[in-house]
Amino acid sequence: MKHHAKSVRAFIGAIDFEVSRLFYKELGFEESIIFKDMSYFRISPELGFYLQNAYVKDWVDNTMLFLEVDNVNEYFKELQNLGLHEKYKNVKLTPIKVNDWGKECFMHDPSGILWHFGEFN
Image (cartoon, rainbow, N blue to C red):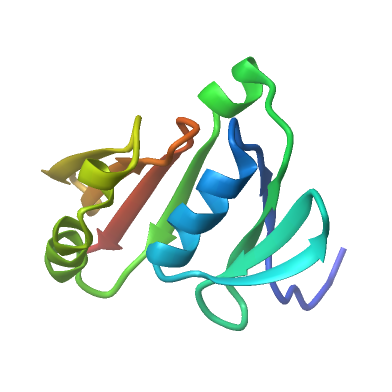
C-alpha cells in the first residue's frame, strides 16, 4: 500500500483522568477536549496522543511511548526543573542512558505510562 501518512496517535489510559490531564499540560502538551472522557494532547501540530478516562492495569502497565527530541541532555534538565516527579505521586524521572543508537531518559506518568525521551546518533 502507498499512503502519505500524516501522524500516528496512540491511545493511553489514566488511573485518575484529571490528574493526568494536569500532568500533561504541565509537561508542555496542549489539550483539546474531544469529549468528557477523552482529550487529545499535542506537543506540535503532528505529534500527540489521546488520553482516555479508562484504566486497565495490564494495558497501562505495558504502555510505552517514545518522543524523539533534538537534545536529550537539555530535555532532561527541563524535566528536572519542572519537578513533576516531586509534585505528582508515582511519577518517576530516570536519568539519561547511553545506548548504541543514541541516548534517552525516562519518565513514568501518574498512571505508570513509561515515556522514553530520546535522541538518535
